[in-house]
Length: 311
Length: 311
Image (cartoon, rainbow over all chains, first blue to last red; front, side, top):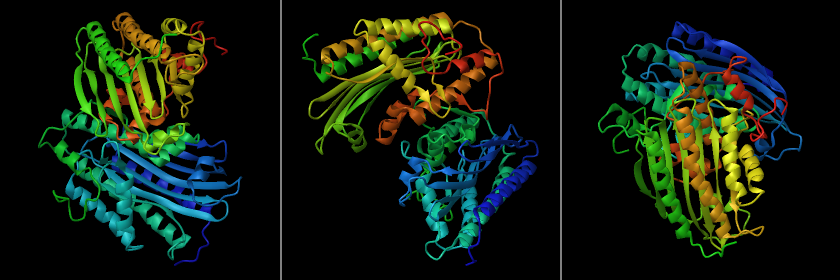
């Protein structure tokens, strides 16, 4: 393990460079859209830069958010932590958060987050992950995606992929629909200096997750954005986008925490799709590709081997 | 006050008749759409009938839900009550819940709810309300709407309208946007046998609220559904519908409680609009009707007198 002389400013600077690097790669792959940057500051301390693409050639709506905020720790944050804290605990949080909604329903929605957190008294951790939400699940695409994530994880610890894959299954789950948001990916939180790790080794992992993101999504942009689609496919995309809205507003802890603590609403809700539809009690026709996708929206599928019908 | 010999079955039957009565009046006013009924049962006890209109002449998507459910009180319900309850407390809940999304952006969205609740040990209460969410706020329409509600309230108690009007302002509020959902209306909960009231007098009030609903909305259907509108108006409607989604999924206690306790998802989410849109950081042009509406989405406007610019 490397020695732990990494500062929060160093981590924050790296995240801001990651935002620049990812927006450059996505713009190049999109070939039409540009990210528009919007700097904001937080009254209690810190701020961020939202980079938003609207009506790109491939990306219909996408946001790549950077933020570094600090100040007095909100009471509901303090309550949610299991550590004892002084009354006037201070926090520091920095990260990059991305959601991309493509125009073509054959291109999946993707989400990525890398974040670092500190709180008075020496507590710190990293969190993050990448997960994929295809409107139409392509089993080979899902296997390829999970293989890329496993390679990133395996370079750091053999337990990372299986543990963080399961965590994503459990986290990106719509309890009220009994369905997953998509084919999952990896999700991790509270990665600190336990179990022989230190800040440098955790940061090295999080950097690799961050660097893996753009090449993974550019692969899907190139491969799927020229596939033909019909009005029928667009309608199913609108329904799946509705489920994305439901997950983010009902279950996503980051979204709810942000909305509840006077976070910057427009940056938090950048994750919402450009358009969504809701039909009462919609059920995809038997044997349709939509029904096949619906059947695959479940936990504990080993995408590296492919789903078995009995699993 | 009338004597209190009213049973929960009587209340529940009245609510079911109210559902029938309202769907008949709305179908007659719509002149095209029909409500399709869908009966469902709850594994733990009871069930309901969802009545849904899709693609009516005036109502693009609307639901009139009846339910009567009972069984073991869910733990998070017991925790939310301030009364002491036995470990195996039983609950009974019945009500009618309505949301109507019109096609024409000049017709407001409306919501109505009447409900009755009982829990082991003799605790009971009524709740409900009616509130209006115009895509474009017409001050005269808002005044007319509040006048109708005040008349219903005043027949029962002089404190009802001012108290329940304020409650609606506070309840139908998007904290993360610092805006109200619409022009409010009345909202009430936990109406029980305190302050000289009894079950009969509370029920009489709730019945009058229920009976007032259809004539109020039919008035707006007739008056506004033939007004001309443009693509621009439709886009603003889609943005306002997005805010409706945000309120219902993030802040509405009934929705969140239902989704969290294995309620019937499709009946709960009947309230969501047929379609919604999200644009990053959208701000209506200065001096536009959209900006005027945005400025009026705030608490504590006395709609009976009309908003003052300084309020």
